[in-house]
Image 1 (cartoon, rainbow, N blue to C red):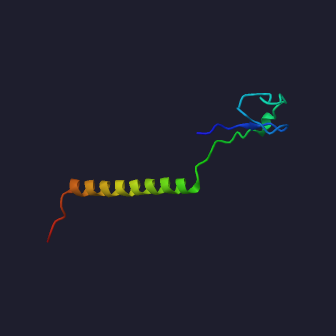
Image 2: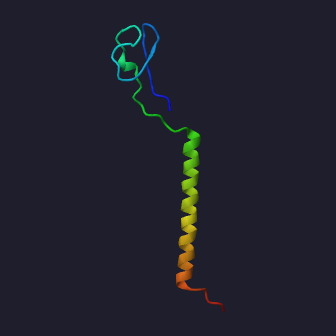
Image 3: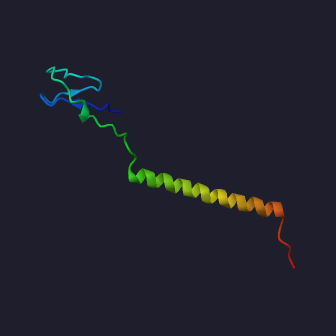
Length: 78
């Protein structure tokens, strides 16, 4: 995993988060430039997870119907 960095506007040095001054040129760092949004899952990953959940729900429904049939007993034959 790569840590987010804060780029110095004066010299372009990539500083670690938490510093208030550049490690190379000692210029104050603009902390407002740090993104505060957490990383988001891509659409493909969300779609895959949704597909997995739908399959599980479908299979659970089938299992529930099978239990109902077993509980009621076999249908009468005329």
